[in-house]
Length: 173
Picture 1: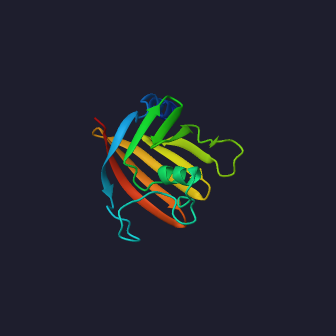
Picture 2: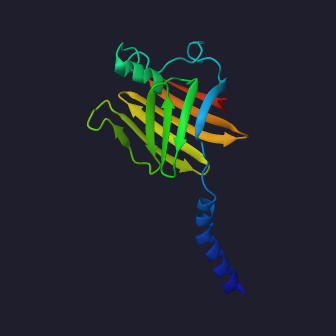
Picture 3: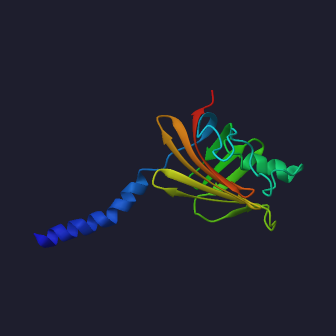
């Protein structure tokens, strides 16, 4: 009897991870509109969330690089469009597109540029972790779905300051 129980436990230990993976990952595809921001103001200065890349982060530059930083590292993007396949996620914020592979290996765009956008992603259960870096700016979004809403925990470090916002998005009509 003890051998049967041991064999059953071993079998469950080996099969459980495969069964969990077979359940599939959430599908975040669609165009999402910001519905709620928490906290509603930046606790450091009392202002509502703004564009990314503050002083020292490059977002204050009046050129294409500065515009890119302001969109990618915005504290609370108003809209986002997500496309998803089994191995890749693409997030569009304004005119900026970020491509993530789900193997936790960096994608560098454009390759060879020290200020290039670097992205990588991975699953943590049903939550999707998207990491991004450009120049001196870092960010991480943790995405999850609940009752048809997209929840994003957005951590941004840009221009020497860091912020964390809990954002809720609804599907755009």
